[in-house]
Amino acid sequence: MSDFDSRKPNREQPEDDDHDKGKHSDDVFSFFDALRRDVEDDDDFDDDDDALADDDEPDDSPFARTLISKSGDDSARRTVSTERALEILECGDVQTEYGILRWSSNYAFLVAVTHDDITMNAVYKPQRGERPLWDFPDGTLCYRELASFLTSHELGWQIVPPTVLREGPRGLGSVQMFIEHDPQVNFFSFNENPGVLLTQLHKIAVFDAVINNADRKGGHCLLDPDNHLWGIDHGITFHSAHKLRTVIWEFAGQPIPDALLDDLDRLCVVIENPASSYRQRLNNLLSAVEIKACQSRIRNLLKVKKFPLPGPGPNYPWPPV
Image (cartoon, rainbow, N blue to C red; front, side):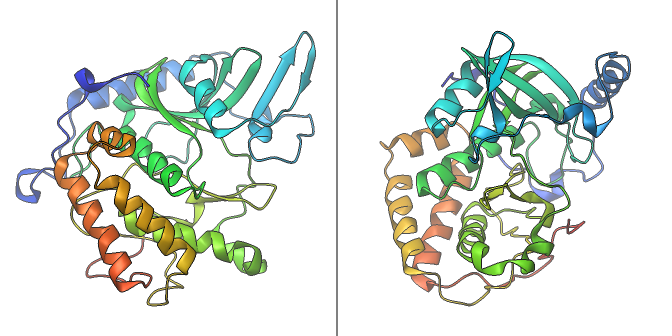
């Protein structure tokens, strides 16, 4: 993967007293205004949801549902590995920008990425479209998106869709495989079929504790047509201070399954090994303080062996969906 160190902002977290909650840089607002004008003036942009629909019936595979193989006038779906999906996202050409995902807090675009004979729908979040936050350093949300994917991948839990950090039409940003899903289905409707999803929800609850997810809304849990549960929107994660805010508190205080503890133990080994590929990549995405705090959270989970309890302060994101 390309080295973006020279373009990174300061990753150190600001002190609360020094970081004005109402501060917004002029260049970010200028970018927002230009972005709105650009999209509104684009004749190719169709705000109708039907414009994003695909009439072809896909194969039964999470990856196949976002991949289209093109040969002449024919189209067909195919399944690829995570490594192949990452290659497409990293090396492919962003040929089509459908428009803004309007429910996103920051600027996010649905795009088509083509590499060789495969086109993949993806979500592109440009760094310049990140709204300033009082408690996270400016311009770091896309790095946290990638760090979250790397952690999910290292655990082997397949929670975060394949994600890369790369240059796009609007500059550096995260590019993540789009998950086909019913937007009317979210965490709060999962009670209709809890048995199928219980193990996957266990993983997401532990994962959010590891990455210190400050924004696990119900709508950030996507159920694909094969009943695989994905987690998205991990921009505000890995803070060194406790910020776990989630709608998934059903398991609080219960024992973490042994299989998940085994995976956590493996993660603890690699994150504490400075020579491991995972640790070296985290070093390029997070501050030393944030990595140390993550190590501490993993060790604590392994010691307590229970799902975390709600802590002081807000414990639920707002809005919850």
